[in-house]
Length: 218
Image 1 (cartoon, rainbow, N blue to C red):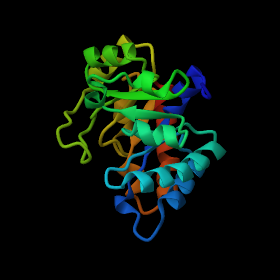
Image 2: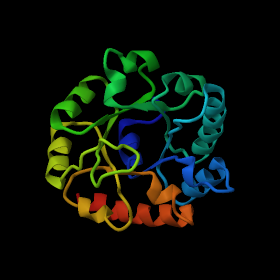
Image 3: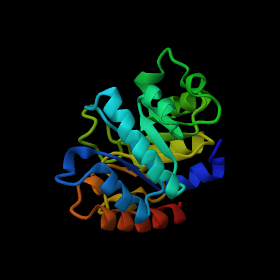
Image 4: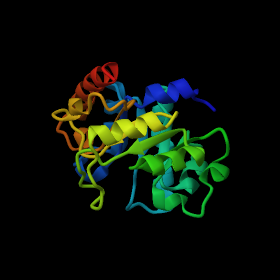
């Protein structure tokens, strides 16, 4: 594995998930470069509207950017694109692991992230060979209409139940991030709190500072 277990845990600090909805006249690689330069520690490319070829071409560009910053790069959902661009790994949801051994598909050396929202699903994810768990939605989210909010107590229970890193996701922004104090998470995953902001770089820098404070306080 290119990244050690300790490096993966540390990379959860500010986990950036791309979204082209707010790019305007800018390109995604341009915004990603700004975000990486300002402290994002993990990068996931999430594309629901691109065809395979365009998704793959974009993923190859973003992978090279992440490599320059020694930041793990994973592809959302598509094992095929992840393998084709030699991404560091893939992130999948609960529905994606039903009847599929994702770990077997990507091999032992790739990073595998899986979403979970209960202690039971988190333990199942760990048994499935995940390197980290994305847990949410903690504050609600516009990207997943059926996501239910999780309390700090529920987050803590999940973190205490597993040995692998946990990153919180769902509606997190600079105004509410520190409400996760005491949850035990290793960091936060954000979409609009970076990519919908007028200055994504400044947003990433501020979120990185807040996440460091969060993780430092447990």
